[in-house]
Length: 42
Image (cartoon, rainbow, N blue to C red; front, top):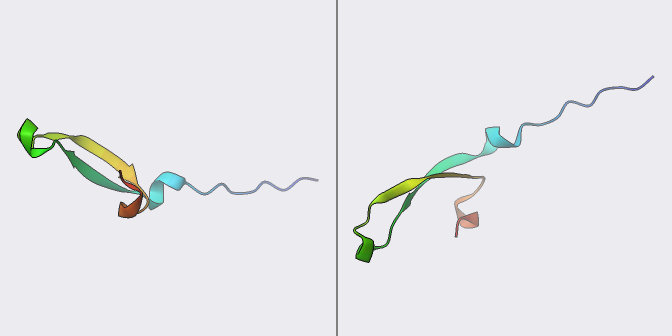
């Protein structure tokens, strides 16, 4: 008899962050990316 393990949804813990272009491109919004922590954004 095997028991099913409940998988944890990794996307539920993430927040969406807005990506902006540098000032020499006019600071336009490029889109949004998910990340678990703001420190993991490049």
